[in-house]
Image 1 (cartoon, rainbow, N blue to C red):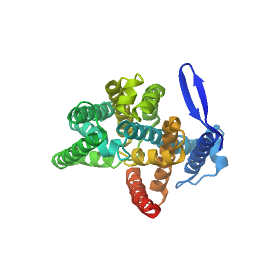
Image 2 (cartoon, rainbow, N blue to C red; image 1 turned 90 degrees about the vertical axis):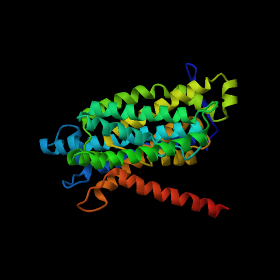
Image 3 (cartoon, rainbow, N blue to C red; image 1 turned 135 degrees about the vertical axis):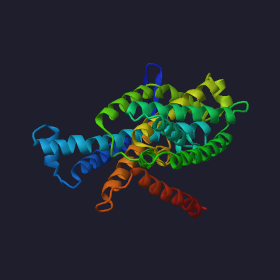
Image 4 (tube, helix red, strand yellow; image 1 turned 30 degrees about the horizontal axis):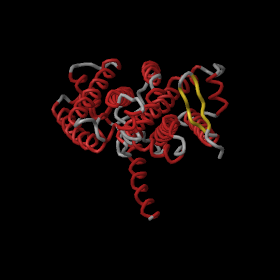
Length: 343
């Protein structure tokens, strides 16, 4: 639908088509629709007119509290964090040119979890302290994996294998921490480690949004590097890309995006893995829009997962991390079956 066009602005370029823009518009409408649905659902069921009145400040104080202080932060967090995870997954899968690469598979999520547990053990409980712990844990894990995987450059398969081994080691370490600390710390770690958006506040969202916005400023440059790196290190070097420096920058940004989400909501698995897969199938002809597409898919995926976590079972609220694992598992089962049918 429509031939590809190039949008240029101050040295940056974006390949787009009417089909890709329509897809983005459809996802934006879906996200808006599910967000409005989320604002109406709950024990205090509300109509769209009541939600709109709360947004415009024309409703009672109680309804404004329900909509703006209880439900809206959770919905905004799902959209923001889902987009961040989608972008992070795309960065890693493009970097190592392997569809299995994602922060939760390679171990960066687990490393961020370890950092937060260490902060809890040291007595820290503020969002800033946990964010610092998650970021430090994720970056330290990335540094160790990078060094162990480096042999005349970083190669995708070796990077993933080393990452899986690091993830297994850190998972064991996290379990050991959980069974050897006092009951209160263990319960806090277990609750946070399940991955939930229930306790996210506007203050946390503001800080997370600022960090994600700051990181997003580097994405146009990274997108250009990724296009070259996807054609091979030699081709990228010939095009003027500082290959190893670019890989380090991409890893740091991918880990930082994951760590921001992990600090606020705990480790949420499979969104970073599945969102780029779906985005590639939909935006496959225009890789320059891959990051935007993955962000849109990730946002919608986490938003729908959180609505299911809250309302799928009557009277029971699940951690959203449990729902994303179920949906991601179903997708990974469906994917090879579809390939078998094709052959």
